[in-house]
Amino acid sequence: MRLVNLNGLRFKQLKLVCLALFVVLLTWRWEKGSLRNRGYLLRSEPLVLSHPVKSNHRDNHISKEEIFASSDPLVQSVTEVGREATAAPPPQSVVHKAENVTGKREASPPDKKGCDMPEFQASQFLTRMQDKTIAFVGDSLGRQMFQSMMCMLTGGDDHSHVKDVGKRYGLVVARHAKRPEGWAYRFQRTNTTILYYWSATLCDLEPLKRSDPATGYAMHLDRPPAFLLKNLHRFHVIILNTGHHWNRGKMKANRWQMYVSGAPSHDRDIAVIWKAKNFTIHNVVRWLDDQLPSHPHLKVFYRSLSPRHFFNGEWNTGGTCDSKDPLSKGNSVFRNRSDDAEAEGAVRGTGIKFLDITAISQLRDEGHISRYRIRGRGVQDCLHWCLPGVPDTWNEILAAQL
Image (cartoon, rainbow, N blue to C red):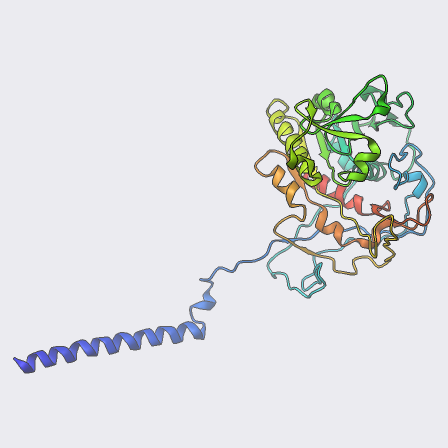
């Protein structure tokens, strides 16, 4: 009996030894790559976003288009700054092992092809937009996107088939005003209308005293611009933006007072400027999202923030942007989230499309008007862009999404 038990114990030990040998063999085979190289593992790869970004120079000027007068003291009209047009290099494609925004070498996954956009063709775009109205609503950067689109469609030349229809949208010079609140032009061959309406904050502005607008304006953070309320049914595409007017200096200069629910706001959270901006963006996005079911023909885009490039100071403290080297910090963007996180969050879960231009525009610090202004020499404009230039790329992305 003692011998039998002893043999049984030895048999169990033998089984354990065999199992251990099998595990060692399996591990060795794994490390040699017989299993690992067969594609059984999934790799987590970054999202590669890369768009061609137009280059521009500041040498030649075209003195046309007085119709695009500026309403911002820091930026001039297309006529004033000229559309600094020279032969631009071909669009940049996705370059693997390119330098990213931080200047570090980063290899993109070899199986990614990036976002290749079709070349923008004016006649084709107008044909696709036949019988449609495209409305740019926003601040002076929104105006530049409108100016860019107009010049992309006309080549910067006057055309007899392009008609000023601003009056039909109430875009006329009001009493005591220097310019209208926007412009509208119809391409008669395709019945396509392109318009811009100035709404720097995307909320409704109402004179505190209609008999004397100089007393200031109620800035209704929870109301969309009255222009949108009145004309929404006439639009097929809307591109919204806001951002750079949300500061105490602009508020004071424009005599804007923040209102919510028809009364002055006493909410401490909203009293913080960036929180008031986000509150407004969420409100106008939600309102438009609610309108989409009753306007099935409508497509709405919210354009992300256009970056500033002031170095060694701000616009009023000697800040400059003197670089003349396009894409000196890289020509590809590796992102899986937007650099304008608040705007991205506002449109998430809605039917509003997100036109994310922040990261690719960040690469173009040399693309601003800089010192090449007609007026106000000594103060560099590192906020607005030379045209042709970066806003053309925004419109190419818009056209591809449409």
